[in-house]
Image 1 (cartoon, rainbow, N blue to C red):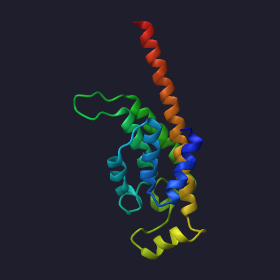
Image 2: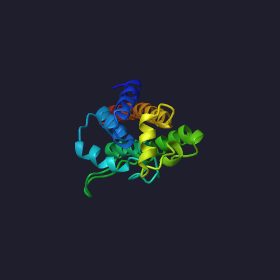
Image 3: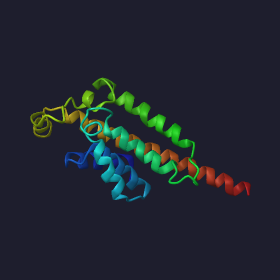
Image 4: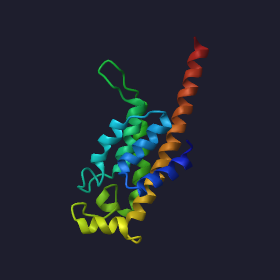
Length: 168
């Protein structure tokens, strides 16, 4: 799946009411060829800025979780790939720039919804003039940027493996 396709699919899933955190994880893991419904389910709790508290946007959490799936370890015996840190910083930097016009990386700054207020939530989902359009933009652009990063990482890893083969 190309980055532009990731962007389109992310917007489609978000407009169908999958949480932004789940959307980014689902799209990113799909790009990596991974299907893990338990991860997608777990990331549901990050919707609305960590359980509806308005804190850090779930789109960033979902994107970073994909980086962790690629480079972190699943047990104490495994080694963590140090590229995880640089890739995460790149995603975070892009997200900072993307969300700066909204006031920051927190859901409450982007969506400006009190997720515990049913009327505000209803307005967010039903009013075409609500800030949902900002969230749609953030989710789509983050998915595209994640796709571009994953493609660069795949190229890097392929080149590294090719070098290792020629050295042996």
